[in-house]
Image (cartoon, rainbow, N blue to C red; front, side):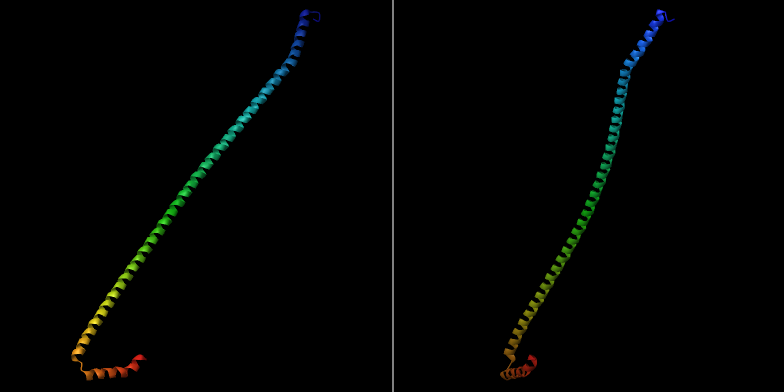
Length: 160
């Protein structure tokens, strides 16, 4: 067996294959390991990117909900403010109408008082004129002197 050429060829072939595998397989295995590591890193990066995208999507949805809520709050606030402004305007209009009504009533009252005063003044003028006519026509000098004397006597009582 040790003298056979086939045996030594087989041994040489096995040694050659061992050396070839030892020196050739290592770089291949290292290359495969590097490739596997690179693929693992790419998968991790892809998972990280997917998680980031998921977080951004959730953040965008949250911001959208907040924006919708803020829009609703702004709308409610605007409605409340519009209602308040309408109520205030109605109160102001009502107050203005009441003020104008009072002013109109005051003017009417003043006009009535002025008309009554004018009627009284006119009645006094007419009564005075009528009295003057009656006195001129019916009053004698003795009667006039008597009236003046009576008025002078009553004067201290009327002054006090």
